[in-house]
Length: 439
Image (cartoon, helix red, strand yellow):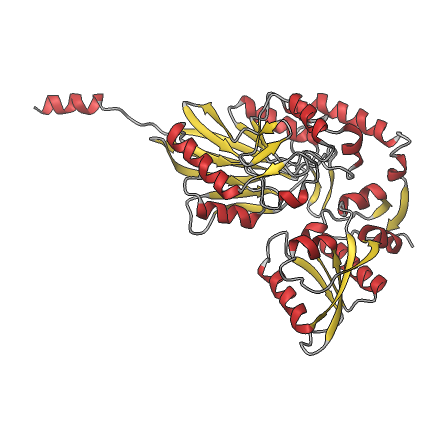
């Protein structure tokens, strides 16, 4: 009997753990060159491709969270469009549809899509050519990894290109996760974008069965963490290839049993791909000598000291108050995308720091109304819809205030609390700041 039991023990199936590495970047926005940050020089498509290609050879799965280009800033995007997308063929396994990806129109997006071999995913996205694929199932190390993407609920306001439409992201995610779990029988479910941090957290709570959400759209640097009240893990790599998110999954008996994550800085310690590096250098020289764009690279001023994102924001808000005679000014954190280095200031640098064509909006509101707006901002702390604020004095609930803000904050981000009668100033935020910085 003992001998029979031993034989049975050795013939029972053993479910060995399998491991897979997932890499993810997002909101590249055509920042092909390394750039200045408060942490040092970061980014560069040649560095990123060098790292991702090496990891791919070692068996990693690689994803893009979308927003691979951005009309108007940087100039690289306007001249070269999606030139970099095919450079990622054979490296990227799937890309999420981002709100900026159709910036140059439906035909341009279709051409970009045709130039790549990896699928562009959007479970709630319909393009002029039809719905995007909701998900893809990738096989690696004997595992089945289900990957999907949704477009955030703000896409109908953000995407101006005709022919694109967007369904409810939560319903799309629920439908997709059900298909991945019950039809495809995947071992793990990964969401790669493209919505804000708060929406990701709500999605994890509303749709059980998502193992990992790679953060996108908010441009936030967020460490690896478990979303409270859920079994879903998340991480967010900031923007412009500042970081690449890395997650290592251990899967046993068709379920995730261990997760580790980290942010990999894209800096000088990552060897660049030599071929891509030469392409970028040649293309940048051509860009800077193109008569259509060369004025963007001519110095228009000089900064004696660098401006952090926060200092740049406060300088901007002070300018908005001064130009409109306002008592208070505020703008979302997302309006300010980069710091400015000391030294020569060019319009290209300024466009990189404030890439959006925001108009200054003013209105008069009571102190109580203003406090409501400030309380709403405080409730968004740590997200890109938190706002920087400039106030002449503490808020008095019994007096009225003239408030200056951006059309984006007034009409989209804070539309439910910014309820006063709005007046267009005809002034553009970046243009007014440029006057101040170049005096």
